Amino acid sequence: MSKKLHSNASIILFKRAVQLRKQQTDAEEILWGYLRTKPFGYKFRRQHPYSLYILDFYCHSLKLVIEVDGLIHNRKEVQLNDKIREDILNQDGMTILRINNEEIFIALEKVIAKIEFQIKELSNTITPL
Image (cartoon, rainbow, N blue to C red; front, side):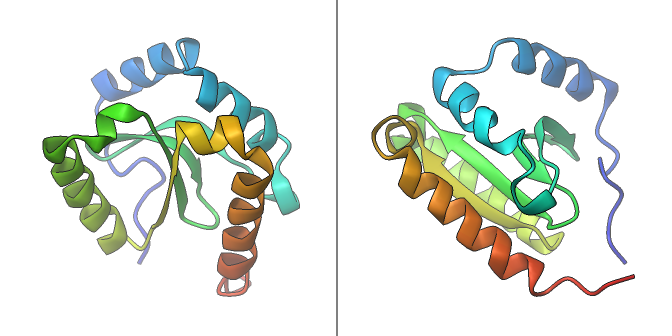
C-alpha cells in the first residue's frame, strides 16, 4: 500500500512550506520554471510537506523527489541528516534526485536531461490502474 500524499505532515509543516514557496532560492526558481511545465505530462509540486519533511519538488504519480542542494549540504552533519532523510523516503518507495545549485546555474540543460531520464525510467515502472 502506498502512503498518503502528505503522510500525516503537521499543520506547522504546511505553513512553513507556504513560506518557503514565497522565498524560493534562485536555483529553485529556475528549476521550477521547467518543472511547472509538467514534463511528459507529470505534475510536480514545490515545497511539498511529507511526513516530517518538506520536499523541494515532488511528483506524486512517480514518487520522485528532486532536492536542490546549496553549499550547506557540503557539511558533514547536513550530509548525515540528508542520508537519514533519504533512507526514510526510500522506505516509502520514493526516488530521490539530488541536484546542486551550481549545476542549475552552469548546466541547466544537463540537469533537465537528468530529470527527464529519471522520469522516463520511473514511468516505465508504473502499473496502470
